[in-house]
Image (cartoon, rainbow, N blue to C red; front, side):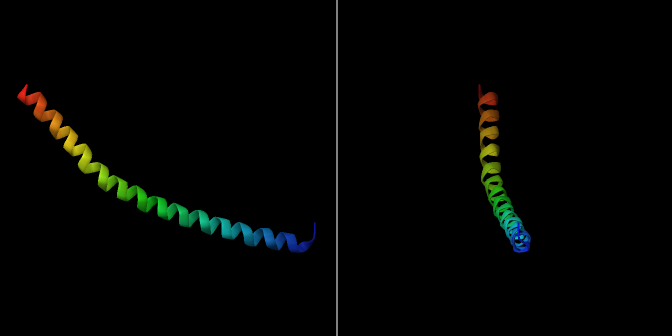
Length: 56
């Protein structure tokens, strides 16, 4: 194994880590967006259920 390989793998590893961090940031944004979409949905369904229970 030549010395260059060690340097290369270190560079590759840092790039992989950076990519993973970017993906995580994107995923976090997606999660926040999905939560903002989910919260009203859940509230609507719970309100609807409560209404049906009270009306029946």
